[in-house]
Length: 299
Length: 231
Image 1 (cartoon, each protein chain N blue to C red):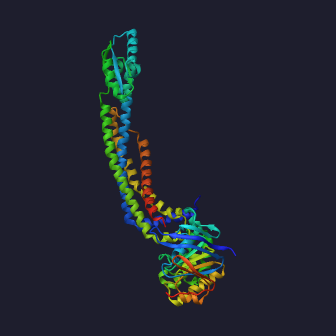
Image 2: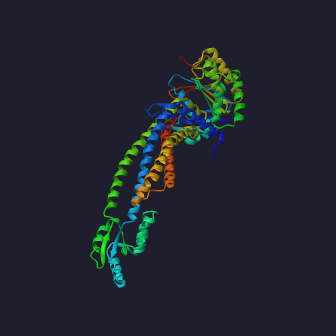
Image 3: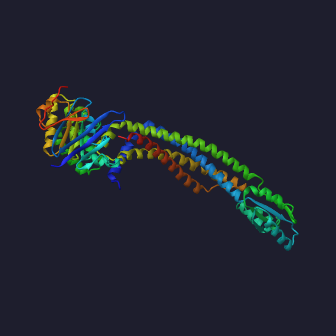
């Protein structure tokens, strides 16, 4: 059922009229949405990045088995065979000393000059890189391969991943509880604002229903009202997210990269997060208003 | 003549157990003018509310224009209401809208075309004799004038049936006659009118069919009847 433009214009007019009439309540509701979404925005900004970092590290969960420099090709092949037979090992990959240096340089960024010396005389040994089936198996696998012949050293993540995951889990749970509380408060405030509008127009609605206006027709202005409040409430959070992430990404990102940590790119982050915030705002608004209207429409 | 309203064995029990209507059988032809009379609590209001589907019968069938509205789906109710005009004792006008806007509102919310609205509003305001007051607000009008606005609103969609629940209940006798005059004109255009009333003078003077309710039953159904009982 397509709505006539004239009707849509009427609904939009009606909703802005009552948004204005209940100015203070509108302001309070929009502010509540704003506060909630600011927190949601900052929280998600951190969580998304922590998740990405954890993911990066996790896919990096590997055991590096460094080889004796004097190893023969036959010994090396035998070792590779042995490594493949260790329990819980998913893959075994050979990494020459040259490849090792390249991947180190890559992970440290573009600053190739400081590696110039290293390229002349590469101190890295040849290595096998083992991937385990699950991150938590690294320790066990590392201990098993340490005693194999021609192995000089074994390196692995040493629990950093576990610590990070543990932290993410706690942060997520605390954040989610807090945010859900705030979101419900916003929904409640919007529902209340809409309720005021509806009470002020009870007579109007009564007459509308009496002369045969459809429920949808009665509902539309309130739907728009809620939507507008929700979206207005997401404006400041979106701007804030853009500013804060610009600072975090361009200001802090460089330092973090020295520590092998890469943040989510600026545009990916701000685009997705902005859309998400506007979406959440819209849902809060519409949900609040529709929950009010439902009670009043039973005429 | 067609039955505009046909009730078959209609019962209504309220959730609190009160039986408001006890087996009503009734037929109203197109163009009739019917008074519904009876003491308070006789079921008049329930009867009226049944006709425009504010209430559903507990049992029985109610045909309006040959359509059984007892089993009408909720979403169809608005479209049904467009074929029934309703007038109340308390006018139910919107105080912030002018006379013109109050009538136009009823057509706007059913998404009539603006040109149709303008034309039709002027017609009905002319019919109730208030064209010259179209820019006034309800509180600038007398009770009788307000009721005429409400009547104009109820008929602007050309409903075949007009329901009036105590339309003169808040008005002085003289004004009441004016309202009856408006009803007469509307009735002469072919609209069926069902009017619940306590106004003995009107019923006795302007003779129409009288249906008397008592204890939720029809106790009298008389052409050219009189009010017939003491209040």
